[in-house]
Image (cartoon, each protein chain N blue to C red):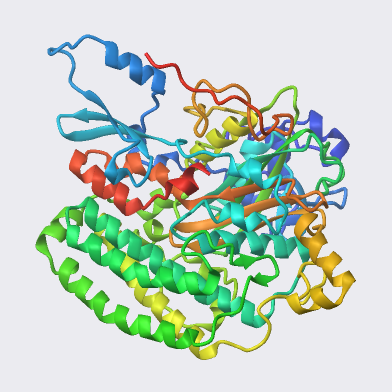
Length: 458
Length: 178
């Protein structure tokens, strides 16, 4: 360190402002930590040069330049926002040398609708209807993490059955989200039959969701205090029937894709990333796990009842597109295990907390009691007040760590709600993954990052 | 500072008491949030040094970075003694995968000079998160390699998540086509 002979600073906080911050911080830290001032993680990113720093205006200006065949070695190309393999409205600015990608920049925001601003005007009970529209392929996770954060602030205990229903539904949602990935990933790479199969298997799952929640997507099912409704009679049979259908079909996927030389050639060794790069870039979920880290919030920082079920965490070795595909396929199998355990162990009891502050009175009471009617009306118009404070809750969504940061001012609407969207942060890996790859492989890379633009743009 | 022998020998636990008795971690005041999360409150000047100490302590991932505009909130979350409340607050959270711990940092940013040093050399993953915070709150991050709007169009005026940015009745702006 350059400041070894700095004077020993006084610890009196009144003088703190006048002191050299470097010396102050060093002196108030433990002696061993003070010697270890980290020089930063930029050095862990050998491909940081592949990140394009060009604005849209500069890109447009570059397009107007006359062609100079002698000196123009690279080509700027625009991909998206309406391109079938950009998964919605992702736009990429690419710098190409022939067919090789040198630098790239993802351009996002085409789906921005100000959902974080909207959330400031919605009550905590209306909140899930808003956040569920962010990651539209796994809406229940959004509702779950919002509800967990709200419950932390409210200090409300959720009944055991509600916790297990949440876990069951989320794992089913993970299966449907990964099946959607299987479909789109296959389609992007030309395995068109895989697209049909992925959608075919996802469809009965969405019907099951409709039966439980009333809607195929954007359920508003998981709410602060529990879930909106109990599972219907015969849900176990519905699920077991589905799982029995799904399992042999996953074996078919293995035969169709894993044993397919063209499929392996398209994915293996493409879009490689290592663990240090993932950590430096904030990447979570299957991308981090493909690089060899077994980090999964469900096991490492358990929420709901994940500490009471058995499941494995599939980990990759090479960090390439194939590992990310294989991990998602294996995660479907692990989710099936969790769902089976949920069916076995589902406790009886209430599906929402019996807390008068949060829970509206049952329908039957409203006909009998004026007070119950007023209570019901108040909860759905004014909403319930949440104690002032700030909190962050996180869950492992199919795409990585999905977090919600809520600041409450004691009223019935959040003062600020921020969503830490895994797709948004994971998009930062794209230039690194694509560097020196072919343009055709860029499509495989986008697909394997599996961004959901509703969540990226919010 | 390894050769300074007269520094009082301190425990390996980064949470400790300074001379004033208030808890301190990484050189910044420490509090516990409503959800029992350790929260540090560095000043803007300290921020890079504190963040680098957090990184050296094994918090290898910047999980989240955002801001809150406390223009209208009379009941804001508590701050430790000695930390002056300002209009903006930048909130960052970090993850230590080995110890399975999180830590949150809240930095006060005044309205008349909304700038904060950028984390991007320490945590390159803060890149998009800082761009989003700049876009939504107009807080500039010193040293960021590409501080531009990310969600709103490049020529948008105003910063939507500020509390004095009204919702509703705003004519939709479109880019001019050429």
